[in-house]
Image (cartoon, rainbow, N blue to C red; front, top):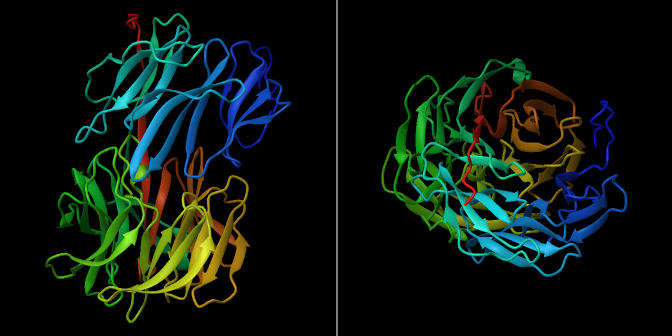
Amino acid sequence: MISVIGATLKKLRDDAHDASLSHDGTKIVFRDSVKLGVWLMDADGGNAKEWMKHEAGMHIFYPTWLANDKRIAYARLWNANGEAKVVLESRNAQGSDPVILLSNPRLSDESWGRDGRLIYSLREPPPNQYDSNLWELRFDPATGKAKGNPRRLTDWTGFFFNNPELTTDGKRLVFLNHKAQSDVYVAELENGGGALKSPQRLTLDDRVDWPGGWSLDSKTIFFYSDLAGSFDIYKQGVTDRNPEPIVTGSEEKCAPQISPDGKWLLYLQWPMMTETAQANSGKLMRIPIGGGPAETVMDVKGDSFVSYGDDPTNTAGGFPSFRCTSHAPGACVLAEADGTQITFSSFDPVQGRKAKLVKVPANKELTRWDLSPDGSRVALSVFDYKVADVQIIPLNGGAPQKFSAMPWTELVAVVWAADGKSLFLASYSSRGTSIVHTSLTGASKPLFKSSWDIFALTASPDGHSLAFGPVITSANAWTIPSFPAK
């Protein structure tokens, strides 16, 4: 809270997101970033209480008071039997009487007018998923129920409407035209990983590109991109200007990596699904490194990694995921996750799944991991606003090690250095991401600070380079000065 007369700031509460002040100025509704539910408190921060409990697998965003302060609206997202669900819903101030106003998996953002008017943006269907348009729906603020049918307001191209806001009189709308893409960058490591030269951009397209693994000679990077529509596998030499397609087709593919013996390129694959229905199982595939038909190594459990929209991080993968060491005989490890734990299993690129190695309690949406170069350990990091804990877990059943990389909180990526004696971390913040080099005892050194959001790291087998995937955004503020009232 800040005074409009002076510049005195008063902290009301930690771990609070998406706050909305009631129209009479007495209450604040917000989302708790730790307990994940929706809470209410007085405008001075007192009398905080949980208004809506968090349910496993459920994501709640942007709780907002409706005009009469009798109901609170919010967006709710979850996956039901492989089908994506996105709804706008409201409840009364006591947290009961839920009413769904709108259900659409392409819902992107919304603005609640004081006259019972909802303005919202819908992402266009593929192949135009990077555009969105505005729609209108009238509703009753007292009941939260729709009055009539949705009406399309714009039919534009080249726009993605973010943060739309109506003026109080409803005559003007302001919004951000937001564009984001991810690219593959490469930087040279110096002093045994203690320094990083200026990164150089490898992929030069305007699509979504994510780094996978390196060739064994550390001269080529394999990555996946939606350059041709669906996500396909490409490779590109670190001194080359153009990528070479390796695996294409209508399926969604990600996470290309070389097998330890250098004979196979491995990757994950899901069938192309509709925007509402998502596959909850996929396949780990292989192709000969010299070219040839793709073959299935084994089935894997988990939802498709693809979630189209204006945020490329939705395509950065997660679980299931796998890693392989970069030398023979080496090892390959698959990680599969449910809501409470991650299971690590060994597999062979030819024979498939072998044995379960270890299970660890973890939140699959906040946990990142990597396999040590000798295949004996995994490093786990967890996204947290206050702590920077990293775990080293032996795969042979030994005792795990835990250390803190403070002050580098909000960890969004972890990868082993080539010597297996240290780690590289990506520490996120609202002002950009830092790449940090840390020992296994927590002695850390920042290597690179950027305004980008960096969500993927991969170190070359020779220890001389680091590739990473930043999300690069551009947004301009626009206004529609004579917004249609009817």
